Image 1 (cartoon, rainbow, N blue to C red):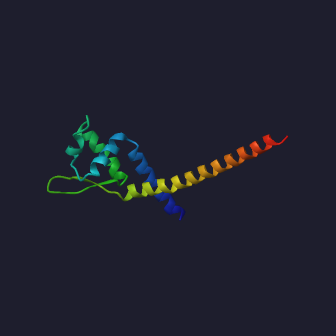
Image 2 (cartoon, helix red, strand yellow; image 1 turned 45 degrees about the vertical axis):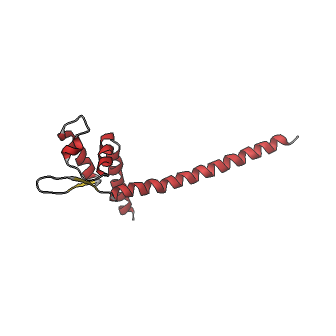
Image 3 (cartoon, helix red, strand yellow; image 1 turned 120 degrees about the horizontal axis):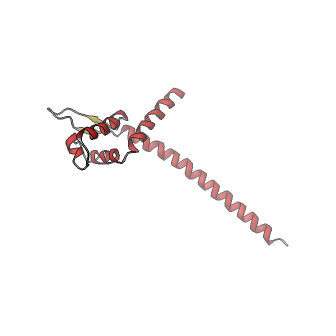
Length: 122
């Protein structure tokens, strides 16, 4: 189980690292609409096709996109499996964090109630 956890964490690190860049997030958003070629992905950005290709390699390494082959073109396609895994990780931890926040709020409310009770005593 520990080995499996390490692999999952490593894949998550690749996903979060890939999504840390705004250009790559924009590419992922564009690919959510459908497949696109490198030229199509490069259009909205003031950067070379080579720079976009580097971003695509990072996304491929994180297994967020795949490249298909259609005749001479190699369109990019969003692969949501690792994206779904990252969302699942965030959701699990969001619930843990929310539960901790709720417990802290309850504890602080109890402390305040105790303090108010002590102040009311003569």
